[in-house]
Length: 479
Ligand code: NAD
Image (cartoon, rainbow, N blue to C red; front, side, top):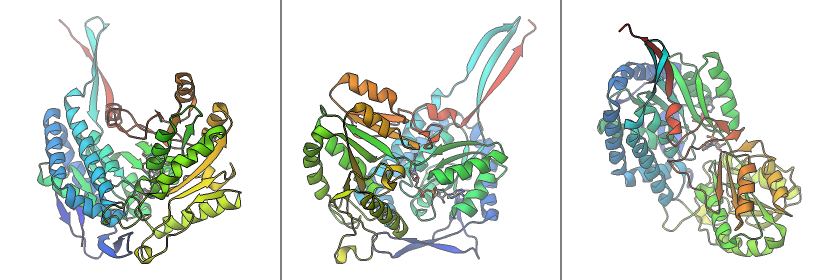
């Protein structure tokens, strides 16, 4: 039975209701976790608050060293952690290993920035007077993370929060708490002091809201759905707390008639079907110039047909199950709606048959052609292995459709023309644009949304500022 990690140890709270963590590939219970209530959330926040002065006092370079050592320790457990992640999340083992390595890389990246945290000096404000721009940590940060990438999305918050001197209480999704709990223990054993990184388990409405509204929590770093983001923003308003919101997306990809169609087809397939389509940045709407649509489909469909489906632990599997049965039902409804709106199913469109798939939450990789522009797959986020494609007559029409979404997270344009690429990259309403490149998130570049995909940035040195208070100090000298 897993327990919450608070103040440097697994802490038992007898009497709390427990939640079963289910393996999405076979419906079996992997483990159970307690559902924290306000009292346990308070215990974790108090530990983080107690640890804050000592951690802030630790020289930044030392914080960076400790973070780098903790990252190495996590890496040395990559196989164990990948197994755990696959058992609770469902993704193929290969992807779990990639995810754990990404977590480690991100911690390493921020460990490396430890010596670059700096403020400013302004001379001659008045006679004998100068100013200092001082940076200081905020205090206790609440980090709320979803189930699709439980560890990398945690790392995006943990790295900048810890290196700048804050302490953290993390709340993973109730369905994927196990890897996070184990990582907290490994990092503590590697030298991260007790109370600096705590993990609570529980539901969003109870544990999550108790964390957001706790008076000692100074900032909430949230990744999840837009609906929950709005709720968190409203709750945080009461305490005038800082929030960073990394929310949903419906990334458009535009394929022009002069594009490298092989490259575009490969990028679309990898991006759409990675993690069984459950990624915030992923090609969720594909706009292809009508004069190359048939050629493009000829390149895309064999790639989709080759995707091997099965439990994440099975050798060679590319497409695991969806995370929950509920997630699968939402996808089924979105596909039915698309078909009713006039879409043609070019591939997939149903649950796979066979003994291997009986107990898990599997759904075939699906390609839809020309749903209505008002259909749910055009308007909503599609968080599963479904790729809707629309023909467009030119770049202006493609950009207009691409921008017609409430979301603005990622976007992609494929063309050999520098003019077209610049034109599109300038006009696409999204926090990230990839030109002739498959989606990859770099620690070096700031990442985040426009419109209802959220605000604030993770990654890049820009992320540090979201965990620092900027203060001014005026000094008058008398000599
Ligand atoms: P969700 O919003 O339902 O849950 C995310 C987290 O918030 C979970 O830990 C949940 O327990 C918690 N939560 C739920 N209600 C809460 C509340 N009222 N108060 C506080 N916490 C609460 O999202 P999900 O369905 O688990 O995750 C998928 C969503 O996340 C998708 O929309 C996806 O696009 C988005 N996402 C965004 C990014 C990004 O960087 N922009 C990255 C990954 C996922």
